[in-house]
Image (cartoon, rainbow, N blue to C red; front, side, top):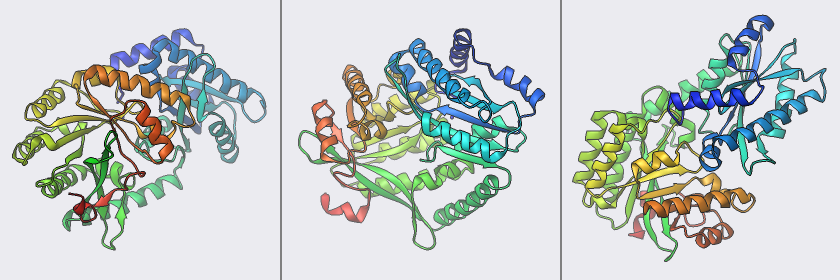
Amino acid sequence: MGENMNTNNQNVLNDNFNLSCNIPNFSQYKKDLIDYEFDKICMVRIETADTSIAFVGQDEYYLALKEVFENINYFLSLDKATKDLTIYFYDYKTFILASKREIDNTEFIMIMRELHNKFQHSSSKSVNITGSGSFALVINQKDMVHTAYNVLYENSHKQDNFIICDTKEYLENQNNLDAKIIEILKYALENDKIIPHYQGIIDNSTGKTIAYEALMRVVDEYGNIHMPYEFLDIAKKYKFFEKMTYSMITKVFNDFSDRKESISINVCINDLESKNFRDWLYNKIVKFNEPKRIIVELLESEDSNYGDTIIAFTKKLQSIGARIAIDDFGAGYSTFSRVVNVKPEIIKIDGSIIQNILKDENCLIIIKAIVYFAESLNAVIIAEFVENEDIYKIVQLNSINYSQGYLFSKPAAYEEIENDC
């Protein structure tokens, strides 16, 4: 991911925090690296940073972050013999832990696991927010900070939030995995095995399926079906994803050309930087039977940029009847200001918020804020990951228009939904 905000705004956030908190910064880390010759670090990224800033503001977020740092320092001070580590502030959502004394790998990993178990989900007493963190441990490598940052980025779409990376095991295993997935992607492209699966979107007022989301699957030579979390990062890293997207969208449009429901296609914002792709997608939608049935669901990453080109293109699509949806709103990379600029017709609430709505009252606060925001934009809302009746009841009670999730249907091949028409 670059960052959710531009570089100047990020620098302001970093500077403001450094002025208000007595935590060593990255410049101090580089000096200490020379003095103490760190051979292992743990980088922690706060996944909920941008969401927290959007909802409570920069000042309140930093109050909560200071509290987290104080709690970690207190925890580390409980046993000086084994926990003599220093926190370094890297940027507004990332910090580094390093030891100024010799400590063996096993002990370091054990301490970091203790920290992970205690602070992966950390609530603030002074500010009503809960943070979620991902941990990357880097051991015996040259540029540890760069490696840790990349590891967190490459695993951002996966469930694993405690990653141990060392030259002997992690990199070898990662390279082997990359090579295996590359072969699967190559086979799939050469043999027309990029397959759409479809999941229904339900109108909460009628209970009827009014649209489907197209979800990419890859089939290998043995007939095994691979999910996006297995191949997405590697497909992007090795430049397979654009070709896969062309294949996917072509099949989806063919499947839904004569159906009555709307169809939502996932499009990475970074792909829209390509004029060739923009022209191709626009022509596909113009030629589609009813462009108004097309929903272009924008997928963001940390380095996504809603520049003038992207905003102009979304308006061009809207002018021919296609609708724009923002995916993973509330816990992804979107901010309110970026969404206002796009003016989408649809906002999809991030699934992690919906999943936790029964056990975390903060999720309900977030949902109410999103509903108010969407109504102000005249946008409708889709709740993702609606998995049971209890969640569905809360969704309905909070003026959410549509639902999607396993309560209604699992993603399925076209043949399995064909009779729904």
